[in-house]
Amino acid sequence: MSVSSFKSAHNLITGNGATKELVGQLNKLGVEKPFLVTDKGVSNSGTLAIITDQLPEASYAIYDNIPPEPEVSAVQVCVDVFKQGNHDGLVAVGGGSAMDTAKCVAVMAEHVGDLESLFGENMVSQRNIPLIAIPTTAGTGSEVTNIAILSDPEAQIKRGIVSDFLLPDVAIVSPEMTLSCPSNVTAASGVDALVHAIEAYLSNFSSPITDALAIKAMTLIIHALPKAFSDPDNLEAREDMATGSLLAGLAFGNAGVGAVHALAYPLGGRYHISHGVSNALLLPYVMEYNKPVCLERFYDIAQAFGEPVHSLTQSQAADRVMNHLREFCHEVAIPENLSALNIPKADIPQLAEEAHNVKRLLRNNPRAPTVEDIAAIYEAAF
Image 1 (tube, rainbow, N blue to C red):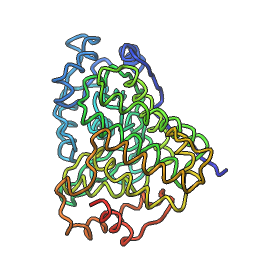
Image 2: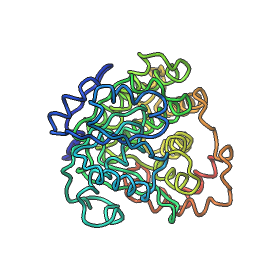
Image 3: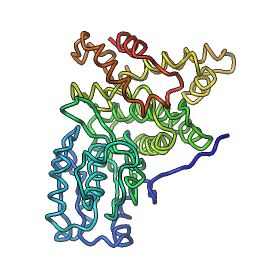
Image 4: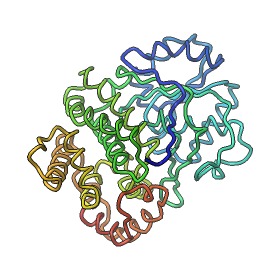
């Protein structure tokens, strides 16, 4: 076993009703004038009221203009509003877009320079603004990771800021916050969480700790997501998904993700396809590519999926995993191919080049793909 470290939000508060701990956590962090970062979907759904009903009306401000795939310019506007209001803390309430934006605002509030200078790994030098993350989807795991992903419209690709200063001070994960999540978002974000767990388990930088988290996350998600998708008010399924997403976030936040995410980045940057949908769609095709080099791990995944593997060879178990993934994605109405998203097949060479340049993620993948390999995966996904 090689030496590894483990990182997370500094304090995890989980379970139905966990949001009632918010005021106490704000007090502990010395936050008197919180800035709530969210999006129109959350604020219009009534979910945000679970948070605001706990706060004195004059003590907070709401910023709900976060777009689905935030760009640098959107973050800068949010930073400006935060500064103008003289706020002393941030509460992110939403999916990955809201949480990633709030992470950026927290570091930019005191950063001398522009946001562009922070892209890459370990470019952030400090953060003193308290940050609490409250997810409203069970998918991104952003509440416990040290990364923020933004769209670069000029380069037409997603880019990341990676720094331990982005880790929230507190993550509050409660299934009640996901009850209003639309079924298509429940599906896409849920499969995204499954991608996180699988890629973390197959990562070149996995550890016994991340392995345990990833396997448990898979077990929860594979059984709970179809229930949460078909029966949105099923609180037990919602709680299993919230927990599964959290565990997957802890796993990939330390082991990393791989080729699924690398190939998804250009799809989001070029065609504005949501992160969850692009990851979910590509998952079976990338796993088919990875399968030959990690059959033993696929055997473990088959067990986590509940497949009867005791009489199967590793190769047979891996095939069961692939069949299970395809049926699972179909059950929750994930698009089956890139053609369904109207992506031009002629763009494959450029997409492959862009994905191959996402070295930060491809180094985690158990099999090192060439540009030609990536192009072949995209071809298969059509």
